[in-house]
Structure formats: C-alpha cells, structure tokens
Length: 252
Ligand SMILES: [Zn+2]
Ligand SMILES: [Zn+2]
Image (cartoon, rainbow, N blue to C red; front, top):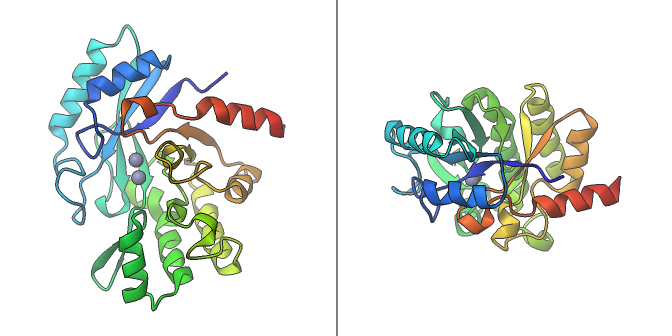
C-alpha cells in the first residue's frame, strides 16, 4: 500500500508553478488522505518570488482557508521548508529542514544549483569538492537544531549535478566521513528523513535522495523515513511512491 500522504509540496507562494488550491486538488485526485504545503522559507540569498515573504502570515491564512474548504475530502497541513539560514520555523504545523547553500567568506554558494556550486568551489574552496561537501554536511548535521524541523529534507541534494561522479566520488572516504557525521548528529535528534523523489520527477536523477548507502546506514541505526515528492507542479504530487513500494518489496 502506497504512503497516502505527501508533506513536501511547493506552490506559487514560493517557486512552485501552481496555486496551493490546484496542488490540493491534485493531491485529492492522487488519492492522498493528507497533503502538506511546504513552501520555501524566506532567505537573504534567494531571489524574490522564490521564497515566502519575511512574514508568512498571509500564506498561513490562505492554507488554513483551503484546509477548511477541503476538510471533507483531504487533510491539509500548513508546513514550511525551512532553510538552514532562515533560523527557527515558528507557527507552522511542521517544518522540513533543508540546506540549499553554504556561506563562506560572506558569500552564499548554492549547493543545489550547478553553476553556483562550480563557481563557488573554484573561488572559495580552491577547487576541492570534498571540502565543499564537508562544509555542506556540517550544516546538514545541524539543520534540525537550527530550524527546529521535524523532517530532514533531501539529505544529499549536493549530488544533484554529480551524475556518474562528474565532480566528486561518493565512495571517497572524505565524502563518506562527511555525510556519516551529519547522519549521526541527525539520528540523535529523532527527526524523520525524506526519501525525496523530486529530482527524479524533474529528470535530474534516476533514484531518489538519499543514495542507497546513506539510506541503508540511517535505516540500520534506527532512522525513520517518509516518502516526499518535493512537487513543484500538480502532476508530481506523490511522484514515484508506488515505484518505491515495489523496489522495497523486491529487496525484502
Ligand atoms: Zn529544498
Ligand atoms: Zn522543496
């Protein structure tokens, strides 16, 4: 039985392509019993329009109105994808804590955007991708403490543009020790980890975040996972949830 909830959903309150109402209608059509809207928190480094306004009051009021309107059909939660640099999430039903940038020498280097990362690694890390990865995972390890999040968003999003090891080798001991330290810290918080299918629906990756070895490591230490679509358009709600069920039952 596929998971019947999706808590990682973006709308045009941040960088999603559709209204919150259209995303809720898509969630109903997909047969979900709960949908969480989780737009991006306000950050100083993002372009206007990509994140919520500094005060998310109107966003919260709109999601509450829609929750009431569709209460007979689906449970709607008002969440947020809280960026590491946005501080603590307050006033939402839940928060997903995510790292989208590292800050070095006063500059923000996006970790999920290839051209920014390539330039940042060259300018601020002397071309050393493992130092960049270490800086990223240092923040990931602290994301629950800093944001108060319930869910850890796309743990290894730094691999989004690294298909076939284009920039770094995920088997390198420096890379492995960086993510393991982050995973150990997060495991001690009791937060839930995502199996995030967002990069698969958008064609950037063939498998969800996190990579299989990371997933196995966290699972073996008692970490809990939920499926999350990171949908930015209606057709991507609950994307790949059924495929994941199939994969898991084959592995069992
Ligand atoms: Zn994100
Ligand atoms: Zn997201």
